[in-house]
Length: 304
Image (cartoon, rainbow, N blue to C red):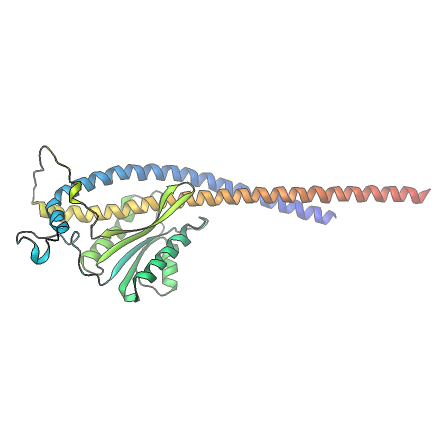
């Protein structure tokens, strides 16, 4: 019986230590989540302003594209930017954003499974798509299955700066411009709230979500130096890169929220286990006391 009590005591102490670790990880993830949400919200303001400027600069091209006045139907003096005009799809690029670490519940499995399901549905051959991975989990998954991973970016910080992700964002835009693929999707988990994330596969290139109707009228127009087209050559790739960066910020917030929720669940489970073990310990201890009393009474009766 003493051995049983000692064993239960060891389990209780071990579970308490585990509970302390998961509780600390929950609080750390909560602090990181709060900071990530602030950064993502601040970036959204910047992104909306850049979108407004880009839409204004590209208004003429966007209007013609929306009216299908492109190719042989387009005015002869219009040179459509390759990031605005769609072209025949021979290959699709996918940037898949996962985490480098585990202990985040279903965060990684959700984005990988949803992406694989989408590819299985939309493609018939591996030659029709190529991956770019943010996070070791997605990169390792795709490489282990012999899938084409053209670029991977690992070990980014919890609140990544644009400089950290510039390489994959710029590589993606360059690969699109060089026609390595003809459209680009970013697949990630969108942060909804602390207990929920939502899978998204957003088309980043070409920039088909820009709407000429969103163009804001200014009392005074810009003075362009150099030409509007030359400015678009610089601004559009930077805008596309910023969209990729924004998706990574959003995914990071979802990752911190998922890890915080997972660690809270682990802490709660540990407390339940401790409660059950405590009840078992008390019962075993009570049984041991009862047995000792019985032995004492039996010994006293035998000595009479």
